[in-house]
Amino acid sequence: MIEKETKEQKTGDVEEVRSFLCGYRMCADMLRLRRYERRRGGYDEEFACADILAGNEAYWRARMSEVSALIGGMRNGREKLILYYHYIRGESIEHAADLLGISRRTGYRVHQRALLQISFLYAHWRKRSVLAFCPDARIDGEDVGRLRHSPHAGEEQEKGVEG
Image 1 (cartoon, rainbow, N blue to C red):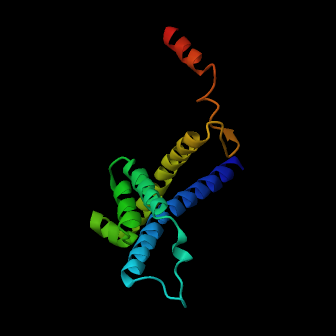
Image 2 (cartoon, rainbow, N blue to C red; image 1 turned 180 degrees about the vertical axis):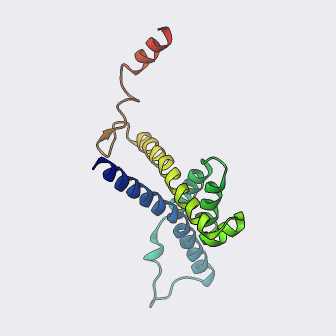
Image 3 (cartoon, one colour; image 1 turned 45 degrees about the vertical axis):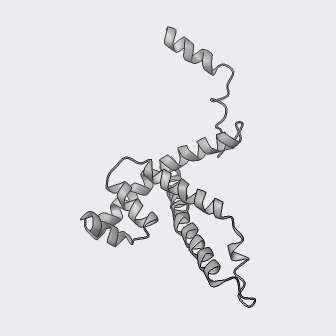
């Protein structure tokens, strides 16, 4: 029963990180659409893209930077490269595998393994970013600010050094 729950939780974490990584392409497409509309000279009355493009360019660029930093934080290897080619460069997994000199099937296996690895990095990054804005935060019922802001945290570290 516990094994099934952890498997479902891992699947949920992988889907969450996959959605986060896909945000890079969405933000890049939105920026490209915004540039196109500027070059074209505005919006049509019939098809007003203003509602779609109401988002903030700074947010889109920051989101793209977060995705790049998350992938960049991985150790070098095939997993990092397959995520880079697929999510940042927009290549298919098959083409990314071809660029890496591995079979299509191995490319999909490496991609799944990479998503699992980066899901752990994403969870750690998410806790750090939440703590930056809200030191007393709780994520999934866990008090993530507790250890960082405990009044006795420094004393415990000092005792460990002395003992």
